[in-house]
Amino acid sequence: MNKKKRTVLITVGVIVIILMTLSIYGNSIAENKINTLLKEKLPAHIELSYKNISVNILTGGISFNNPSLRIKTKDTVYLQTELEMDSFMASGLSYWDYLVSKKIHVGQISFKGLKAIQYKNRSSKVKDTTSKENKPLPPIEIGKINLEKTFITIYDDAKDSTLLSLQNVNLTLRKLELNDALKTNLLPFNYESIALETDSVFYRAGDFENVKLRHLLLENQTLTVDDLQYKTKFSKKEYSRKLSIERDYYDVKVAALKVHEIAFGKNENDSVFFNTNLITIDQVNAAFYRDKLIADDLKVKKLYSKSIRELPLKLSVDSISITNSNVEYSEKAHLENPAGVLTISNINAGITNMSNTYLPPVKTVIAVEGIFMKNTPIIAEWSFDVTNTSDVFKFEGYAGALKLSDMNSFLSPLVNVELKGLVKETFFVINGNFKESEINLNQNYEEIDLIILNKEKTENKFLSNVANIFVSDKSKDEKSEFHKVTAKATRDTTKSFFNYLAKNLKNGLLIMFTSKKDKEKKKKNN
Image (cartoon, rainbow, N blue to C red; front, side, top):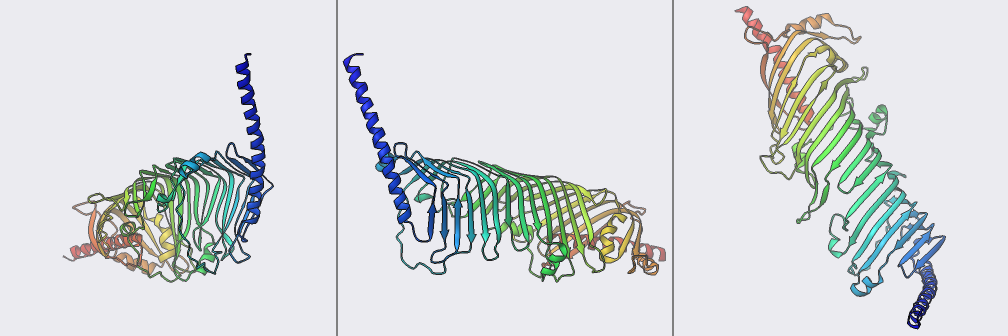
């Protein structure tokens, strides 16, 4: 080895040794400075502890083992936030970026085994009246934020109950950017990609319902949810005792839900928007129960077109697909009787243009097919223009063969009536608006028999015979197999759209079964 090479190697070696010595010495000084700063300069209501700290000034890294942070409500003894974790690590801090451009750049921030607890509504009652200058935020760039095995709980302090709980959260956020220009965005930061997964989520949706889900996965623009449940948290009897006005009891389960191509944020006019091209929902099992013994809720109910139109955000959902689903509705009207039950099974449905941003002539269209009660196939299509302030809609439907005895599980408990006979086919079209509507109803039926029940649930033959005098037992005549009628309905604005739909059908059926009988009597008299 010649003298020149030896000199270079010795020089490099000396520099490395000096840098290592300075680094070790610098790391020690930095650790001591940070320890002192954290112990002496933190506000009185913030407590920070940790097992040890490690600093590497060459790589721009800092880590804490078993850190714990407790934040109390200012000027009180009440705990507001508590964070505990196995470790915290930040690396890749760029001194050069900060010195040259006053930009904070961190390569990676990692939280492992984080347990976070937040107590809602524990804010200080003493307001800080001192004026504070809003200093501009230095630009911040973080290459990657990583959370592993995180548990988050938010408590509602007023009721000492869990408001939100997320179990075993894993999050990876890449290329995070924060600056003053992003402060007014819906999310005050930008990111390149996100991957969020959690095993379990619990959310208290209000005084009566809870939301639970077994698994959630968010990968950039796609959200997947498994085993979602929205359920009233009381028994039906206990729930009824708590209500002063009637309200539905919910038990809704969704096996799988997926939202594709999600986009959200704020528009130029500062309005919030949410867009997706497709939502797929599979295996919904929904049960709704209403206790009619409780006083009616007399608030005006919006039709769905108005509800969508008046949403506090701009919504654009191109398509919704619902498959393999079932719905049950039960209603209790008499204390001594059980609830009447209606069911629709094997539901497949599609919804297009669920939006308050599309312009006419685009309409929201809901198409449904399923099995009504035991074996009756049904098809329905419901359409409306969200922009139409009169809430004009069209609802048309078809039902196949219906044994009227299948309806007795609903009618008998509610109105002490049973039916016999067969409705072979039903077609109907309802055109209406917020106030009034008209139904065109076509039915093919035969051997209709109305049975009036007494308190013992046996037939009152006298009343049954009287009632059947006014009921036509078949639709067929010399002109057609079908009996066609038209009826009108005025909406009770304190009732839902489905009450409006039922009122149209009831008015149509009333004319259907009685007007034909009147015609038959007149024909005989002539």
